[in-house]
Length: 260
Ligand code: PXP
Image (tube, rainbow, N blue to C red; front, side, top):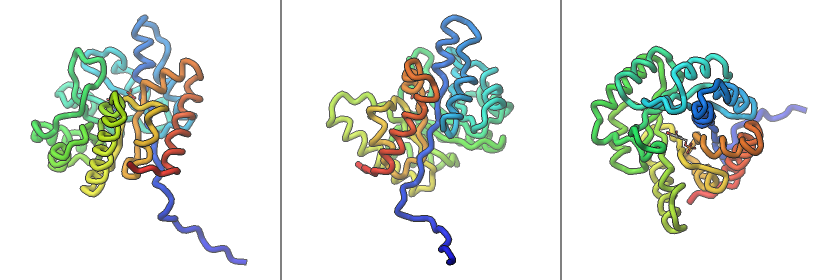
């Protein structure tokens, strides 16, 4: 009997990718100036446990990831590397030399604990456009890390960047259900508009097992970048189990489909 060939089912949810950020493995290493724990070893374990990509943020103050980590992570892990960086001259030069497959442009303030808010693309369209062009010419796919605000989307459209990563920090830090629901709606609206404008849409920052579900359920978001909570859970469970449980939480929410 002849079997019908499988056809893509448009009712199936789009798969969602997990990018694991290994910065805080390097934070522990730098705390003692040792060679361990190694973000590359963590990256290999994460990839083996189902991470689709690995993210690292080379900050100007080199507080966690170091320059040598970038090349090692690219060479010694089997999944694409996403380099988060400020759009500064030294970083653009470094990225063009290292040529990771993806770069995410983020704002950077020296004294912040972590990235506090999205890139203000609207106030520096020319500078960001030039940075995107340089990275594109080096064969790098660029994402802009932005707050879910319509004027940032309008500005991002002028830059030529193909991907946007929505900053989910305000959602993660919301102190009331009302504030969290309002921010979730803003993120969902932005994701829809960004996809309609032709961007591939990612999200990240402050996501953990308790709050990832509603974000993973937004169908236009195709990638989440998560670091701190996975590294924290890995202290108890080990890296592979921490990655697997995050994957399960994302996939479960995606399959249930709970758009806000
Ligand atoms: N995405 C971007 C652009 C970030 O800057 C960070 C933090 O480095 C993350 C995702 C991951 O955030 P978290 O460590 O809170 O999961």
